[in-house]
Image 1 (cartoon, rainbow, N blue to C red):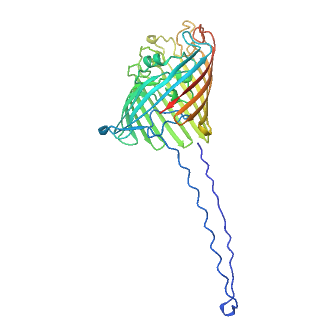
Image 2: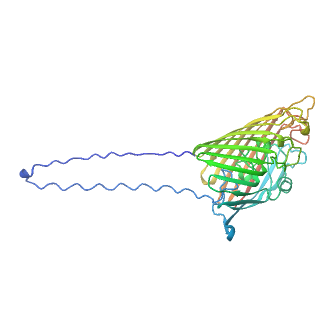
Image 3: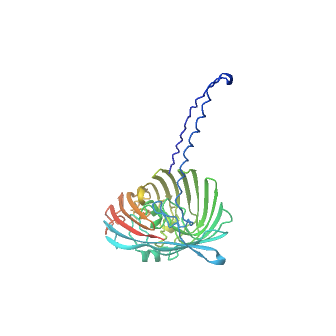
Length: 412
């Protein structure tokens, strides 16, 4: 967010008083002019808002974490901080998928975070239940999502930090891929978007980070879409141009064919290559973040691809911060896919059928007062060139879906 500096200058004119020589002087010299009043003191600089001593997990720019988390002295193991989030949603949708509900109430987060943030050896533990609402896909309730995605310890890691510039992490790591994170409180929208459907969320692995001035680099060897097969490698580079502008590039993917297929490990995406570029600009209350994404899956009989399907997509995220704890966030996306094969019309599907396209719009107003927050959301997805049975509705033939959501909770 830009800051504007204002400079003022003042010019003071002095009058010179002349006098006659001492031998001709007949009247006393005039009294000296009084000294000018001192200039008023400059106003004190406005104090910066307090920040939390912990930085993991990341939070949405429209939500502020607890700046005074519980600190526990564990003696030999140093100070541990405890934070967390409890939240739930009410949701309504049109054209529900088979087995999905038109309206429902559910928990989105019931999670606690425990971490040590200083010293050579640090750690982070995330525990609890969650759901992962995502536009254009069936809603999976928290009980099933927690069990079938990443378990009740979705993210945890040990961190070695010999200095402020270099660190190594190992464990269940948050992904480096994409402009959106995994859990609802981490994003400006309640639901993740169409581009997120092609990205992984949590991976087991090891990651090295290095920062030098405005450049931040990370490299990771991991199991991609939580496959428990260590066959993914990627790297990221972020360059901070100035306080208002930064650009990031992320690229990588699978280096070996893997046939694992679960709810958390979609078969084709787990064998892809993926590349992201996104740019962030802030100006006063505005934040703009355009993003581009490309993915490609090899043609391989082991995973059932008859061609080499790919996707290309773009998104624009816009945030406007208002006074009093209010903010407004929107997301506009478009994504297209390739891989249509007349001889195998259901193979190579990465979206709503091989060769399909889609666009979406999402708007999310948010209000926060101390630890309490509430936000609403309207989202709309439109699919084109879709294949019957792969789109929306009970028969997969509807080409659009709208959702209304409300999420509320506390960040402690």
